[in-house]
Image (cartoon, rainbow, N blue to C red):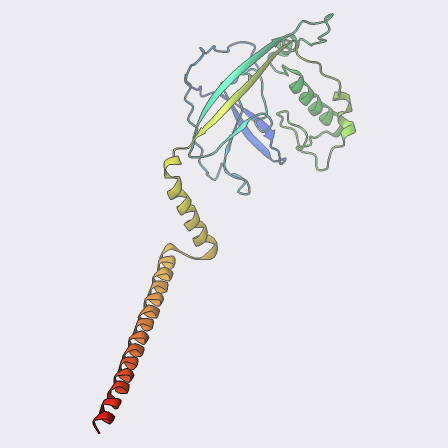
Length: 271
């Protein structure tokens, strides 16, 4: 399977309220048909490359990672709300699964709503489940009352201006019981398994990280550490040699003293 070059720009806020430009590949936003079916157990290889340039700046206060979300191609979602992170220099095996719940509309007790019909009437633009319906309601109410959006509360993709002050909860009171469960609901989940190519060199990497942090924060390089070890060994060697020399001098003096003590009685006996 090849990823198409067409993509949809999705403007969302992350969990810290910072704006982000996301890209939805194979998106069918604004269309009501065109989805491709994939056979079960099909292997999809997706290689991501990202470079830091003058036109692609990142917030240096946050760790470098990519945020990914698997979703229905007819919808736009916020990957920071229902996605997973990809760290650099790692391989990931993603096993997606989809669960479909088909409920009966009123007068049955499900009290569900046909979002699909509403979505078709809006030319393929709009929510397809209760959660997205609520998020769109929050967005519309915020724009209608405050003429702006609160980045810490609005998760629905939008390009509206950011509110300078906090938006109080009473603005969203209408949306509390506004949306109903979807008659046709698709839940897509993903089991993510990380396979790091550097796992075999974990010990070397750990040593490199420690050496790098020491050199960065303490100003101690690997050469300086070796010099310190060599100096310590020389001091130990010199101390051991001095101890042995003092022992030899002490033993020699004791031997000479003992010899003289034994010699004097002989001379006295001869006299």
